[in-house]
Image (cartoon, rainbow, N blue to C red; front, side):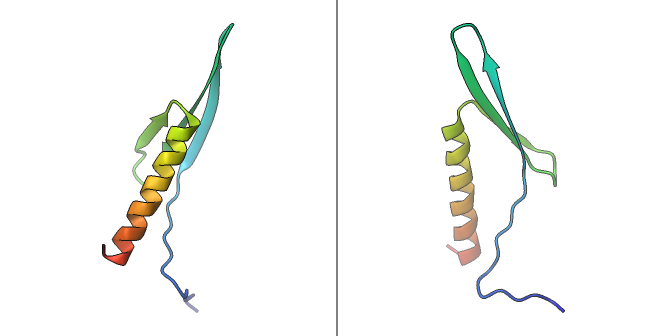
Length: 68
């Protein structure tokens, strides 16, 4: 039996890697997202950059599904 949903389902999958570089007087968080379908990798030097990107692609995909 096929599932039906009241609204269109938008699904994206990523492999998320998070790490920290530490020095004597600093620490910097980094992250990368890998798309498992084509192994495309995007890296981020700040957590906010990662969040901004995820928000951007979720908004873009929603608009595309709605035909805008």
